[in-house]
Amino acid sequence: MTSIHDVAALAQVSIKTVSRVVNKAPNVSPELQARVDAAIKQLDYRPNQSARRLAGGKSFMIAFLYNNPAPGYVSRIQIGAAWRCRELGYHLVVEPISPGGEERFEVLDRLVAALRPDGVLLVPPLSDDEGLLARLAEMKLPYARIAGSVVAASFTIHTPERAAGRMVADHLIALGHRRIGVITPPPTHRAALRRVDGVRDGLAAADIAIDDALFVQGQFDFASGIEAGEALLALPQPPSAVFATNDDMALGVLTLAHRIGLRVPEDLSVTGFDDTSASLTSWPPLTTVRQPLEDMGRSVIDALANGPVDAPEFLFTLVERGSSGPLSPDR
Image (cartoon, rainbow, N blue to C red; front, side):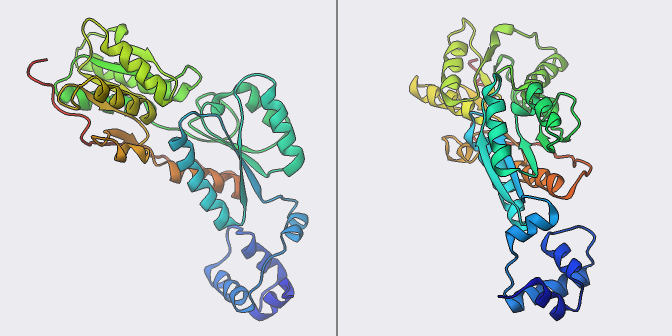
């Protein structure tokens, strides 16, 4: 069986250099990287994972913990994270975990005892679960967060939620809409609540009176989108446009509109958030805010695998499709 010594001899480098290349360590020169990679390929060398763990004191596993009812959001982050783990020689372990209550600590304790992950990736609402963050800190287990809003000593990707909400409001107002219904996120999703603040900013800037009846809470799932849509459309003065703070709820509103005979966007404009794959397959295709979720997942893995780095800034963009249109003259 080919050994690391064989690779080092063929590449004419030290065993330590081969180890650094295999473990994707930073600051390896391109010339050495190329020589070692060529030797590995020629010899068909397969690193011994057990030896890697013993030598580096690592498990080469990263745990992805989530509790989010929007599968499109979670899956896109997972795809980016999983591919980056593969590139770096790590494995991604995905574990659902309930927010609140002692159960989440029991799940975490079992996970750490069994796998000893090198780090943990958290997404909303777990990104802001202060009890869970404290437990991870107590365990001295590195963790990184996407869209965390509470202060914590971790690598955190901060997302421009408020600016994105304002962007949606400006879009609908430019189309002539003045009564804009908003399906808000669950209160545990603190980052997403800033999307609602952004809508309020846009309404205030356009000198449009804010009607609290037009703000209805959802649960970030399809069914609650239907329920919130029913509540909004039953108002004495229903909205001419609805902004749902994630795509799953927006698709619920689209389904409701079709069910009751409303034309989209002629009778009702609908917008979402996240640009999940379902937003393209709906009819009409959904106007939504695109988050670079795969890139976020990759960046978090980089931080956990390679040590502290500055969090990059990610831009959100409005993707205009057929579900939003000008206010009808008869409205």
